[in-house]
Image (cartoon, rainbow, N blue to C red; front, side):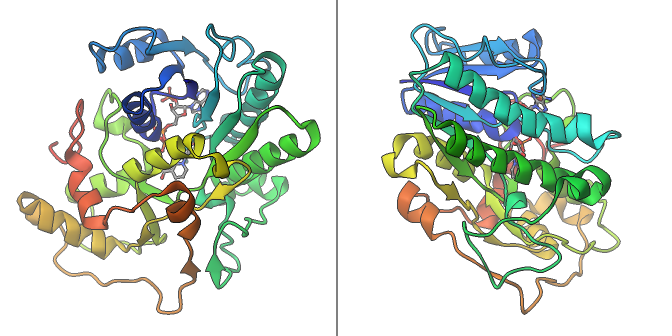
Amino acid sequence: AKVLLTGGSGFIAAHVLDILLEHGFQVVTTVRSQEKGQRILEAHPGVPKEKLSFVIVEDVAKEGAFDEAVKSDPPFDYVIHTASPFHHKFTDPVTEILDPAIKGTTGILKAIKTSAPTVKRVVITSSFAALVNNKQHPKLYDESVWNPVTWEEASTERASTYRGSKTLAEKSAWEFVEKEKPNFDVATINPPLVYGPVVHYLNSLSSLNTSNERINDFIQGKAKDGLPPSGMYLWVDVRDVALAHVKAIEVAEAGGKRFFTVAGFFSNKAIVDAIRETHPEYAAKLPENGVDDIPADIYQIDNSRVRSVLGIQFRSLKESVGDTHLGRRTTVLEH
Ligand code: NDP
């Protein structure tokens, strides 16, 4: 079967791409430039072009961005849409974050409905950001929970922009399916902070993906004089997230469902301990003291749907943090 994977140059998507190839899929991935596409092909020597190729989609927010990319011969059976901005360095929240997330999602769904009638399922990388309610956490987070963020908040409060982008993008996908009744169904993968090996190409460590920055900061010695508050407490390994995306196209019952793809709780202290255990050579860069600041009365989490429907078994924090240096083309823990 043939899959269109958007944003193949990204941290999570690079793992999705590898698993798709391992599972025998033909893959066409979208990237923003010829150079980025070329890097992906170079990282997969010996894979024939019928198995792996790329098309350029410079900006997912542009009207009609995916109109050509969704057409292929032989035609696509599935689409995995991961491309969406994840950073906090924006100046304009609407054009830099919200538009690419929301219009990127509705745009690809429209293009598939119009021009790719063979597509049976679209898997969308959403986020725990689309569940979390920071103002009032529920007692339990599972797939029934939605972030109540509004467009107004997302476009005016910096701290709400990224989370709003993921929430409103995912909502627009479910609304699209309900209103347009396309030939395909949708499944969403909703991970919290994702850690783990970097297999995509990086020009430099400064272009490291956002969620691994925390680990990189610790090994650079940035918390040597004291650990900052964890701030967030849920995490998952990138390989488990990637496998969840692929399983979500392979497993028939995954259609129409959200998947809260979470491994468990972490604190900055737990990450530092995992680095110290797996990479004692960094001990001098790490803070010696620190407390586990996971609140005693923290909400519960339920990842049973991902385990039972998609068959995912989650890696431990120690394994994930320890393996964060195992990139094929770049080494985060080795700089
Ligand atoms: P990356 O920054 O590595 O990947 C983002 C990808 O989206 C890149 O391929 C990037 O291309 C592409 N992209 C961003 N904006 C545009 C645009 N306007 N037009 C075209 N392509 C664009 O981060 P991740 O791999 O972490 O993120 C992938 C997905 O996972 C996102 O949807 C993110 O929201 C989601 N996610 C990530 C989590 C995490 O902790 N990492 C947690 C939960 C969800 P380029 O590299 O060329 O800029």
